[in-house]
Amino acid sequence: MDFSEKSQMDLLCEGIFTKALSDEGLRPEKLWLACSGGLDSVVLLELLSSWRQSHGLLPMEVLHVNYGLRGAESDGDQTFVETRCQSLGLSCRVLSVREGEQ
Image (cartoon, rainbow, N blue to C red; front, side):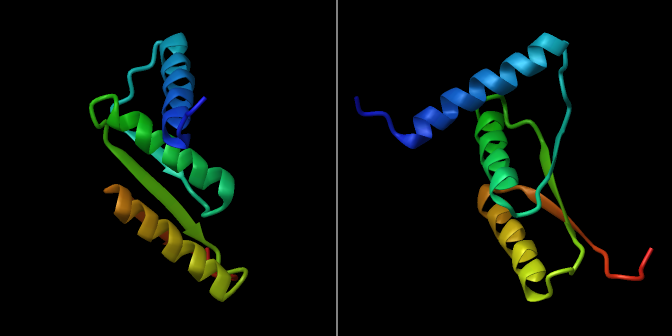
């Protein structure tokens, strides 16, 4: 069988998100996603981005918090999330929090 990863991903997100929203009777006006830059949140970012494109481009915004706990690595995560969001045409809000700040 010749299935591309993209078509499998589309089928997966179509089923999961559509069912979850319809089971709860939800009709969101906007999607928000917290994305750390780690594998799990980036996969969710890709899935939600794909799903929203097939459902009328529901507005979506991504949130990222940079705690700076890993120095340059933390900044790299932020840059990665911002760049990925830009390539997907999504707005990304970043909150930078440093040790000792409230």
